[in-house]
Amino acid sequence: MAEATRISGTEFAKGLRARLAEQVTQLKSDHKLTPGLAVVLVGSDPASEVYVNSKGKQTVEAGMNSWTYKLPEETTQEELLAKVSELNADPNVHGILVQLPLPDHLDERPIIAAIDPSKDVDGLTNTNAGLLLSGGEGLFPCTPVGCMMLIKHAMGEDLSGKRAIVIGRSNLVGKPIAQLLLRKNVTVTMAHSRTDDLPGECRRADIVIAAVGVPEMVRGNWIKHGAVVIDVGINRVPDTREGAEEGKTRLVGDVHYDEAFEKADAITPVPGGVGPMTIACLLHNTVTAACRQNGVERPAE
Ligand code: GUN
Image (cartoon, rainbow, N blue to C red; front, top):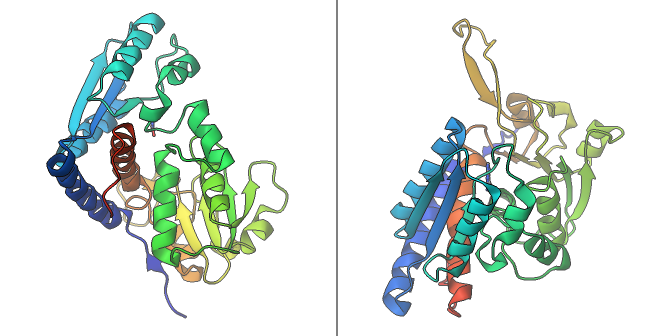
């Protein structure tokens, strides 16, 4: 039997960042426009700090302006709202991202709601969520946008009539992916923890998207022959493989990779699949936002 193709998000994201850097060069020379992204981090959560530093580094590497604001843990709601207002008013800032989760004393919804939707490169405001739902032109969440790029890379642009299952109904991933698929005429099943006969539902799907946060939940015998499998999960588990050092851990997705690899036509690994696409798509959204705010046509990819 033919083996699956391993969809390398690492490679795809590298190519996307290179194409974005070319677009930025073109925007600078043709329109004197340098796209700029501001990232706000409150507190010192180590994982968030790594993520935010990585965003800043990749933004600069793409030739864009980058501002990172690291605010103290004790920042108040009013102070954070004031920072968002300041960034909304700055014409050099085209994209704003407030790193989540925020410390417990801060209320996330009003902070997100305060971001100018045209600068909401995370696609989290109600305006952008509504535009996604109604088929409008907005800014959409980065991980779902990255998943769509990988699906099209594996299956081609025309997804009409395909069946997809999205396992997981989060606002950041599951729901927006389902909407992006619907916009491409895919027949979408939304599955979640209460779905009856999940393996049976999964076996009908040409596209399986797993975004539940349960390590290796999707087994090989859930996958239809020739399906495309996109694994959004990133779970750290004890490494119980033969030869592994005592106490070691490893990252796995929501899909049992080795089993699914035997059935799928193409599958994303964890790590190195969807993960690297998220920041690349953040840069993509920032270029889109900069072009729209300045009435400039986005350079072709
Ligand atoms: N924290 C982890 N992922 C994300 C993301 O995509 N956006 C924001 N704002 N915070 C995050």
